[in-house]
Image 1 (cartoon, rainbow, N blue to C red):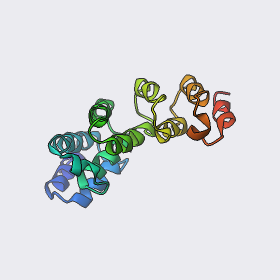
Image 2 (cartoon, helix red, strand yellow):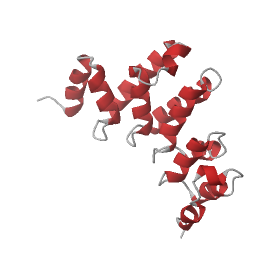
Image 3 (cartoon, rainbow, N blue to C red):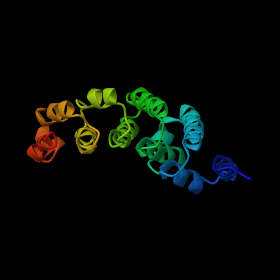
Image 4 (cartoon, one colour):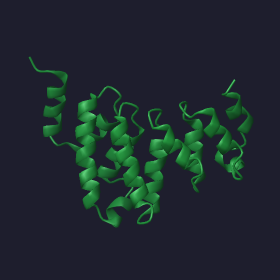
Length: 165
């Protein structure tokens, strides 16, 4: 009898971009498969040119954004994806921003990354951190009292701070 992971591995052998995109975002995909997809996509991104990274609709970008937002993606893989975002910040800010935004809304993202990105220059990253249900109160307060708070949370500072009650 075939196991669930073996079945998913067989699906990956089909090498269908559409299937890989769906598997990366599906909260039912086994962790082992998410890890395999993640490692393969990170390798592709290492070889990607700046032009490749700036294409919003490219397959590797879509897959990595889906993995970054998937709550079942293992924390170590999320950290590797975050490292990729940091590394690419200087080369292609748009790609790095979109990747950080996907990570920031993931409830499984490590708190140390939320803390670091709470002061991100891009208000959308801070906004996704504020919307993340796993964001600790201290980080919400940091965002709420940030000099750009009206852009960060669109005037809903009191609502966010009420989450601590």
